[in-house]
Image (cartoon, rainbow, N blue to C red; front, side, top):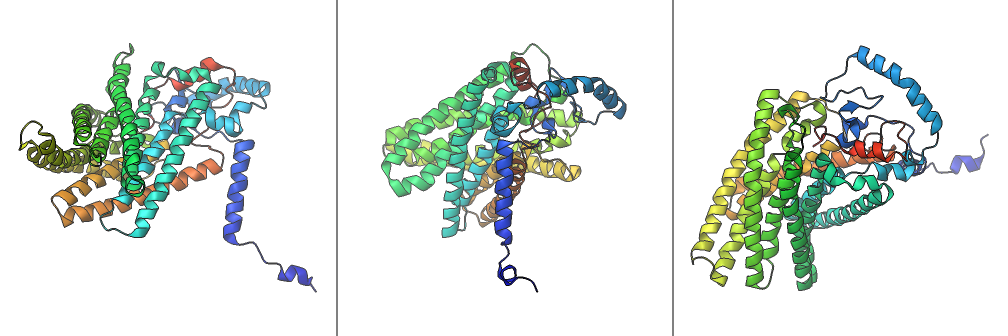
Length: 480
């Protein structure tokens, strides 16, 4: 007869087992590594090629098309002795395992995570059908996003300290474009400070948000002026087929900062301060949106001539929605604040505020219609591809579609319109579901050792700074 003790001993709960297994797997990843390298080129273009050539062991060509088996076999057979020798020379490379691997291959493209998470918090807070649980959910996502932003900034600084060669951002124009995701994230955080913290904590938070917005506006302006120049000053020619929606990143930063200007100006107690913020918001909007339209013309020509991008970067088709959706939201909110501030400060003309408001709503409506074209093209492209691998580009789903929801939010409030309110609700729910899916896939990869998001080509010596520098300086057409 079995022992009574074993009969009465309760079995571990399924949830407990799952949490325990995940914790053990994450601990192993941070201390020992995964031991499986995966395909880094599918995620990070800054690590996928060296001077236009693939790394050993990668089976994906630079243009996203599979390499002929004969070529792969010949190249791998030639590279095999070098790989074996290098592995023998560095059997326990500490830079390729544990937390050092995560820091070593952490690039500014990870700030797209905070961009996507930030837009989710704003949508939850501004959801048209209010509920108390939605408010607290938006607060939780906001705090999570703030913690991620601080963590990512810390990892970036740590990477610069441990590997000094990664500081030469100016020599890596493609990687430098991702720096604009930092001020974009700051803009979203400032918006949530105004929506959540100002009503709870009072006037001192207003001036804190205003100061952060000033820093954000300066960073956005620098990115919009300096980063495009880095691309055009290069001596090597870039074919039209290699042109990607990545060029929109610096421009989006200024458009998002202009929307934050309206949000902050609306709560500033002194009209003179609100007027200065409002004028700067219009300047940022005027810099960002027309530039985005120019880039979209070139990008549409690239799509018409060279057809859809590779499956690995098909999500980039959603990028043009970002400046259009956020641009419509920004101009509508700027007009709303101008209608109140211009008469108080006697700016331009007594009717200037009403004109700015009406013009803002009309422009928002026009851009909302233009967004429908790019939204249809993006959804049709995803449906056409059907299957595409998980990579960092999946975070390109949330932010652009979220800006479309915000544009609908502005029209729903100012017209007002039940139609746009329903569109905003449906879009916000879709963005939240996409965010949950992408977060789950990201956490799964992190728990299993970062095989897709943090892995590197095999046999990279930690002391070879020249190689690491070349790893960062490659074309950015493999991610959003």
